[in-house]
Length: 403
Ligand code: PMT
Image (cartoon, rainbow, N blue to C red; front, side, top):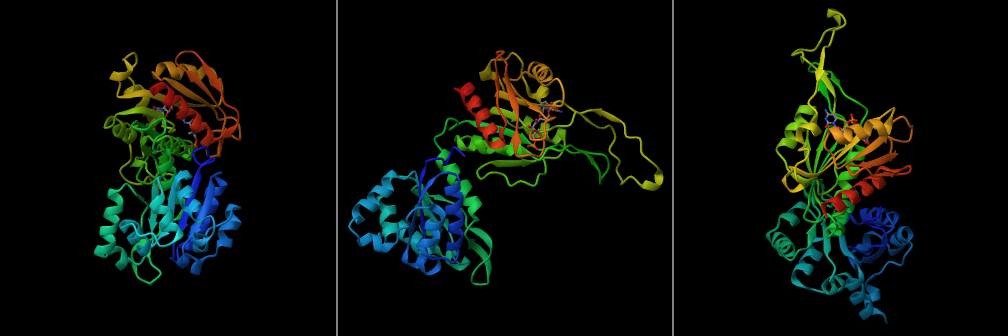
């Protein structure tokens, strides 16, 4: 995951029962090749130990006893200056108040005050504490200073009550971290629309014609565009996946709904990773078809071709609804020939020729084998790589074309 590779993340942990979730977050960041230094407040140490974090990061975890050691002044100043991001998760009401008022009475808050890197907090407290005007004012102060805030979520609280105050799950904080790190990426200020999943064409109120697309490649593209700082709109059919943090999501089912959603949008780039239907039932039965009526004959008609409809072949890039247009071609035979024909007929800047005959590529799996064919006649053969890596490569080309 190149966005986190080699990044220096300071993870502040404060005194909340959600402190146990911070260990999972530290582990996820470390697995993504970030360098993670954990700073525990005294209250955090009541819930978790430095050893917990040292075990998952492979690095020393720091506590308030380090504030009074020999290295103290170097520690807090250098941490806050060299880190790429200071994340405080969980962040209690008490620590939020200290941050808002510039109070620096422990290693974490001293570091936060000296920090020149961006700060992201994931609040965790009881619902009443979060709703309290004091906390709300502190939150407004922090937001107005550019502090990034993840959550809190609503749900079951440690007090036994239901309310807003739960720390968001580590995977979601992780998404916020990616978004914060990608802010000034190659696509900052650009809008990218990605379509994902297999469309569903209704036969009757119960049955659909669909395909095996899981949405994995499309969601990976949305995440890769976010990692480069783009504003991302993900137009998706129903999938089992969680949309990446920061993407605005439009849920659709059929080709027509996907096309309608796109006709309301414009963007710097459109990436059509969705497996959209070529055919659909000509008539959708109003009531559920009954077995006792025998085997139905379902007449099909051509579904609208989304890319052909939205492309403006030959128009200057600046005049197009989507300045850069990227398609995929899922092919089981004559891969490059068929993909090349789609590249031209759909007016694309480039197309990812996707060999779906291989077991480790195409629908459902986590890896892909693609060849990129460009409108200028060049091509790039990508080896077997993860869908995330394939997405990063495609986003690199999109950024280059938009330069
Ligand atoms: O979702 P996953 O499980 O991760 O699988 C990924 C994938 C195999 C679905 C993806 O990598 C892929 O290849 N998507 C395109 C599948 C497809 O519909 O290919 P196609 O050759 O039929 O269509 C060519 C292009 O035209 C595609 O960009 C498609 O989105 C677009 N199209 C297709 C039909 C249609 N009615 N309108 C379109 O615009």
